[in-house]
Image 1 (cartoon, rainbow, N blue to C red):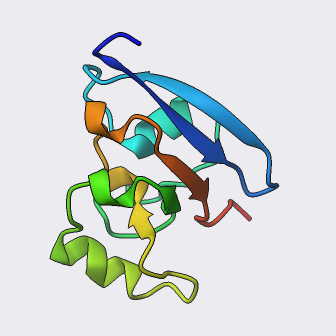
Image 2 (tube, rainbow, N blue to C red; image 1 turned 45 degrees about the horizontal axis):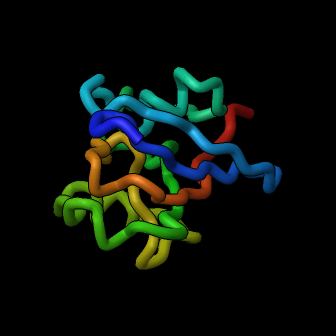
Length: 111
C-alpha cells in the first residue's frame, strides 16, 4: 500500500458492501468522497454539520478518528438512531491512520 492511499469499507443502506480506495492528499471530507463515489448522501447543508443527512455509523476504526466537535455532537443528538458510533461524514477527513476503517451509511434519503 502506498503511504497516501487508504482503503475503507462502506456498507450501504441495502447492506451491500464495497471497499473504497482513497488518496489521503485530496483534502475532501468523507461526505464528499461518498458523494463522488455515487453513494446517495443528501448533504442538505453542504457539509456545515447543520442537517445530519450524512450520518454514518463507524463499525470499525472509531478510535482512529478525531473526536467529534460540540457542534457535531449537538446535531447527532437530534437523531433518533444515533449512538456512540455515530458521526457526520461531512466532519471526517481521513488520514493514513484510518486505513481499514468500516462505516455504514445511515443518513436520510431524498424523498
